Length: 315
Image (cartoon, rainbow, N blue to C red; front, side, top):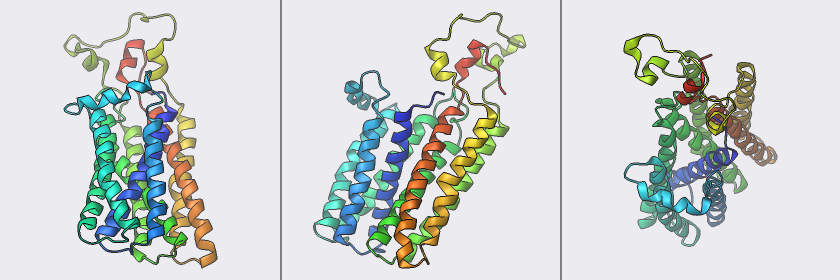
């Protein structure tokens, strides 16, 4: 599939924003962090900025962005519509949770309920985003159990790196934050590694016989090309990346989304005060850049079954 940069930005930044909201809701509901006003204000500012900018960028790959609101009408059957509905509905508990934290400086009572709802809506929205891809039967690289797990893990991982930065900026000593950084980073690495192994060991497409429904007649092959010039479908659905380039980008993504930010963020747990904030800032920069490379590969390595019609074959 041809990687759309607007969708890459959307999934990267909105995922990090929802991950940050999830962790803020989790730690507030568990009473594991003090409701510091400026910590809350800064956290919600970054989270809302990433979520809103990500959602807006997702409309740029549409032919008519002004009609994006119509996508909300098919929520009964479309995960794209459900994603939009959940994203909009989530702003109510998000805003009430932010009001309680920033204005009232409280996590108790009803504000605690809004904290739990914030975490729930953040997870559900990321889940709906992942299901847009995980339900596409025509793309083997996405139609599998790994897709949802990766989206959820990366949202929480990138969100935890942001959360770690905020904790050091405001000098909040919460051991649980360091633990989350270490555990979620390893989880994201493990799940992504399993996904890449799945891609390398599984066929990209179903056999042409099954795709055409002619498996009872024997082997199926293309007699003649359906066109003489490359068309839109081939440009968008037939994008491919050489294996050697894919391996290089995988290594780049590994260093960017995991190794460097994980070492930097985990190191801030016991680092000297003057090192904590610069290391946490660098961790955020690397994890966001590395995740964008990972998302580019997520689209570039996916192959659509329709390309069998144009004579493509597995490699």
